[in-house]
Length: 457
Image (tube, rainbow, N blue to C red; front, top):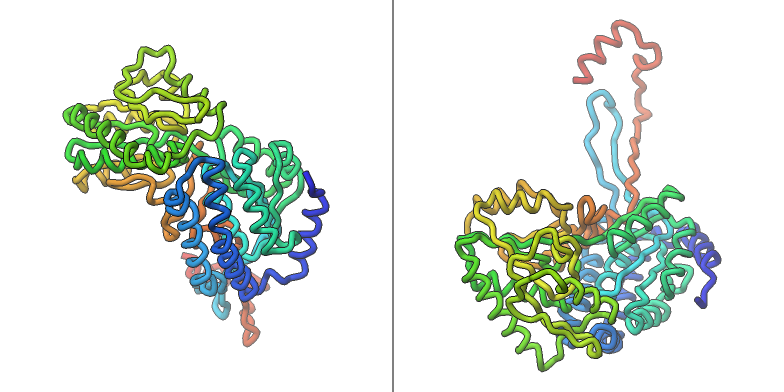
């Protein structure tokens, strides 16, 4: 650790208290500066993503760099509107006054990012923190060391560390950062670590956003376009070798179409794997995670439809389909976070909804159907962070849709304006007139009470 954390936090607090970040024009200039730097660093970041996760140039741009640039451009276009005080109505009882809400930055924000999308899950929260007028410390994951170093060089070459800094290191560095009093904490990672982050933030009464995970289901109803559903589910599952927080974790398919769907899904998984072979598909992040995935397939009398093979040396794991695994087995209890897809049948829609409701609230949910009634039932009766109808994963890439979990899958949301709102305190102000002063509030009596009863209805 090359940086003294308490000193860094103190520097950022002093920088924030100087007031420089409060000016919307300053924030816009910083966002434009970050966009220019990101464009210039694209080749280095692509190489880092390939070194850490085996991502091809196309996948690196599609899933990391492109959406991050879109977030930046959206924030630059929209910040003047977001940063303005917002007028609100006032009740008749407060005649003569005007109410408004002023978004203001918290101060210094700590952003702890994961390894699976080390650019896209690091920079968009930072964009929100900058847009809202905060200073920030970014802690990338040590499991993506090349990208972590590239981000440190990108940010270090763009901003003074008293404003925005990247701190690298192992888990002990994250723990040291969490012992400091930041004004906001933003964490993306597992539910287990998220609980520890929230506990550390609570010691300082620091507000926090937690972007966690969980088992995100796909429901494929009998009236779905089976070929299209299979193609889009296979894509969502194999993206980044399944190491995506919103990847489809398991499929519930109506029994009458299950065999047809399973055949189509197998065909799509194999076809997409062949098509990606020229670019070498992304790999599992390290041997420990690969062994964890392999253990999910062991000793359970599972029916493996396809896949199941892996290479520990190359950190490759074949996309694997499981037919009707035991709902009590580890593969159905743990978040898979890899290219293993259990497929289970249901009879009536109510059975599928009950299956999902009996488990922790997922980060994402996907329903495939041609029926608006089935869509309404599913979206209306199940609680989940976000999702898609007749697609997977893509909701994550829209800056107009807040992204976040609910319950065990997270607290709070971000992307686009939601990022600005997350990193802003909303200060309520009532401006009262000096042209007159209503006397009844100073000596309330029976007449005042009658008046108040008419006003406060």
